[in-house]
Amino acid sequence: MTNPKTLLSRIVATGVCVLALGTAACSSLLEVDVPSRVPADDAFVPENASILMNSVIGEFECAFGVAVASGGLLGDELANSSTGNTQWQVDRRDMQTSSTINTGGCGALGPFGSFSVVNWLASGFRTSLEGWTDAQVANRRALLARNAAYQAYSYLLLGEQMCSATVNVGPELTKAQLFALADERFSVAIAEGGATNQADVRDMALVGRARTRLNQGNRTGAAADARLVPAGFVKNATFSAADARRFNPVFNNNNRGAGVTVGPVYRDLRFNGVRDPRVNVTNGNRLGQNQVDALWLQGKYTALDSPIPIARWEEAQLIVAEAELEAGNLPAAVAIINALHARTTPALPPFASTSATEIRAQLVYERRAELFLESHHLNDYQRFALPFTPATGAPFPLGGGFYGSQRCFLIPDLERTTNPNLNGG
Image 1 (spheres, one colour):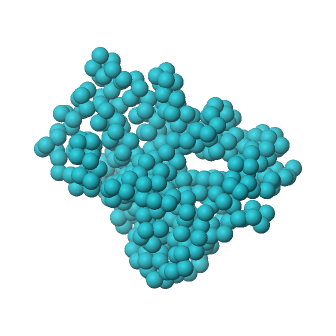
Image 2 (cartoon, helix red, strand yellow):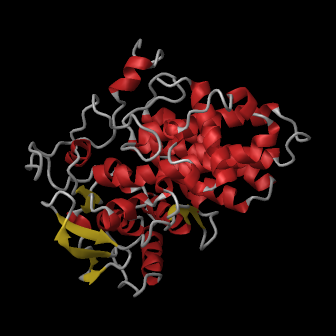
Image 3 (cartoon, one colour):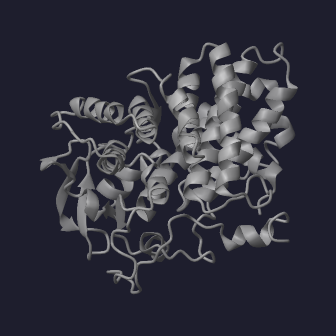
């Protein structure tokens, strides 16, 4: 277990390095030997407030990319085409807690390590902001709101992708407890974002809290937030071609590195016989990195610096549609589906049904297509108890063994043996 103070120091030093010297200056925060150079007590001062905020965002964006790629691999959006044994475990759905999965920081396999870094930094920054005055930091309330939004998403994604997790060397938390933490932080971001005229923070947090409340089974509350999101809203995680640490991980691992291929379900996704333009996938006509699996290429992200949506209006609309369906307002749910179809290029045919079962199945499809490779489908696997593709028990094509039934990531043994608040460690 890394000492919190040392870890925070390293992150701050990385933020300083990036801002001062350019993104190529620091390849990994864990490679930066900084405790003697930038002690945490010296880094957490009002003069560094902007640097600390940029560091939170930078660490979150990297962790979010990890969640998109790792979650896509454990779900059915992506499939293994590499020679790496740990990646086989994720794709095969039989991860071993003794492996390195979830033990690394930014860019490592699994969401736990990278989001733990975000939470260390965001928690330390929050404590500092709450102790500083408006005279010391002129935009203090604005920073509190923005920091809350990004930390809330860290809690939310841990809750969606982990079976359970710890936060800041604390005890084991259930999904419900992680969602409760996310809800509280999103509520702060909504209130303070509105009070400080930060529409992007407020709307980002509205989508996030709607997503959180959907996970909590509070569809009415989820829809109330989602309806407030303005049409056209999108909040992106940004990436860069200038630094390997900031590469778009989907494009890098699929199109550039051939270590993952698009999963079979997504290779020719169609609605009523019409190929869905929201899932742009092509046959690479070659083998992946392992020279065994066929390489299918996603076209949603076209470069190393392509942004990935964290939150957007279309997601909010699908949340409203799900709430309308559960409330028995079937025409409203169908209308939202067709509004989304009309926005595709070319437009998809309209959907028509008066069956709640058919509409529910279509909403699952809409989320699969609309939110492809945006961090959602692994959680939908759990929420809707979707069947596995390939099925549990099917032979794994490389490395032996059979596909398992894991639907979420596990706390690694490294955390269990070094966290004093976890299992008596």
